[in-house]
Image (cartoon, rainbow, N blue to C red):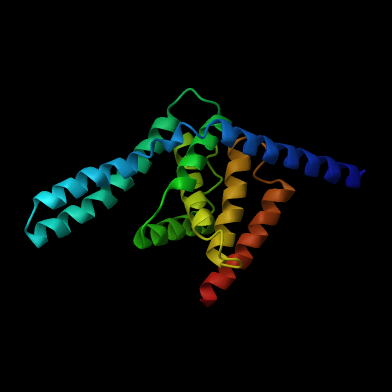
Length: 197
């Protein structure tokens, strides 16, 4: 009986993953607006007009602030929309996969998800769309950043954090399910590797 349950769970998970992959392809036109890339263009024009290098240095920090505000606004907008949790997840996930963080932002995202996990907060409020979508975005950005770096503990941690966050948020798993607990075990192993770095 237990084998049938595990087999059924595996099939259901596979079906959901394939379904999510199919959804990503159909929604790909909307996130390609890439609002963050338009703003640096106007900053480049401003830089060209400015001759003072100190003014140029000040203007180069503005795109980072703008990008940060853009992802926060994106999360707020999606969270407050009338879309389903799956549609909200899909939109934020696609946005996050195309998002390019700077080094300090990547470090901030890593520290944030690690601290949320260690504090036991990350699955406490799965009905809070803005909080969960923020966690999804940050974990997806980290996971995407390290996707080609096999064995990177931060990427592995982010992957498991993302799995637990997205499946509990969308109602696929409960916070005390076997798969969530197994992922948390993997996350603890990744944390051990991170602390050894």
